Length: 142
Figure 1: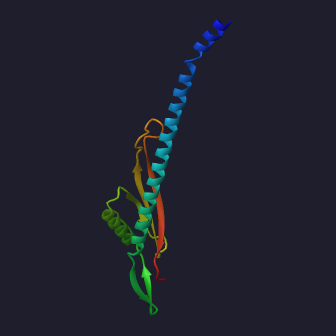
Figure 2 (figure 1 turned 135 degrees about the vertical axis):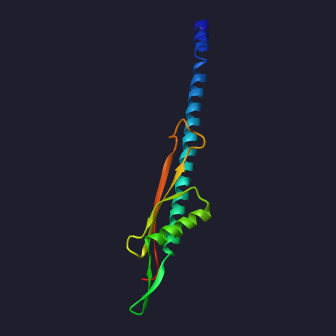
Figure 3 (figure 1 turned 45 degrees about the vertical axis):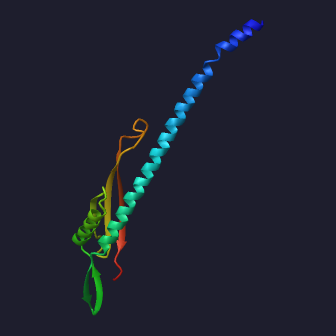
């Protein structure tokens, strides 16, 4: 009887190793996906920041006009696009302007996009995607 218990114990010795290896691979895959998710979130924050800065620069492209004896800031879509493009060139960002303009002559609305590629875990996450962000900024005088 002792011999059969020892034989049964020896037969199950390798199953723990396979289970440990399986859990280790699962843990590594989970860590890699979390790293890529963090990288994606940081890349989106960079695109949001570029859009905010471009909209702010676009809102500074106003021209002052005097109407009824009061200064009025007039904003054109061409000026918004020009200022936002200049800012992104100075920043040397990989973001590009998708759309820039003014919906009401007072606000600058800029949409920026940038590509994102995974750094480590190409097997577990998509090959890449285009991140996009829209920001609006208003001029001070109206």
